[in-house]
Length: 231
Image (cartoon, rainbow, N blue to C red; front, side):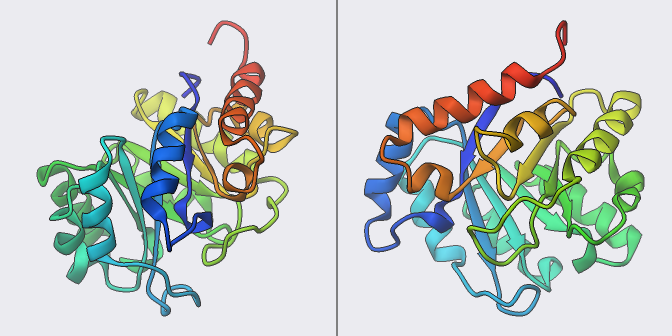
């Protein structure tokens, strides 16, 4: 919280016919993390990529890979993705309703060498994260409904970021807070970073920019400028 702002472009907005070119572009642009949206067509209506793609991605870049599992059965599939050696793995609290099983899954992700991340849909009470805040290295706050790129930021999402930041200050001060959905340099990066976000997922805001490096820099600068003085 209130650390250096990291930019995690979502390759869902990239060119799947020439993804290696796009990864090289992101590296040159100064991206900090590669965000990978895995959708199964059940947990969310869209269908994207799976394990083979993540394995190939791992082979072509040294940037940290952040895999967001929007799947209905993470307990069954988690080891497939961990075998691909991602750095961060996000699971949805809604996909594992049994609290003990979810605690166990997060511990398993850490034991396998990845950073466990927990997330939830925007219409789920943010307080649902409370029992797990000490089990994770990052919380992903969704500021759009998961499933499709290019959506507009849900107003008030910054309040959910602030809740997580306050909870983390008490129980997990090293927690990273990631925000995904409608992040831009003009307004929303500042809104969420003022409340404690320090990892910003951006898709079309980077890939559709005429100068991706300038877009990455602008989002980072806007976020860091909004952080409270002295933090």
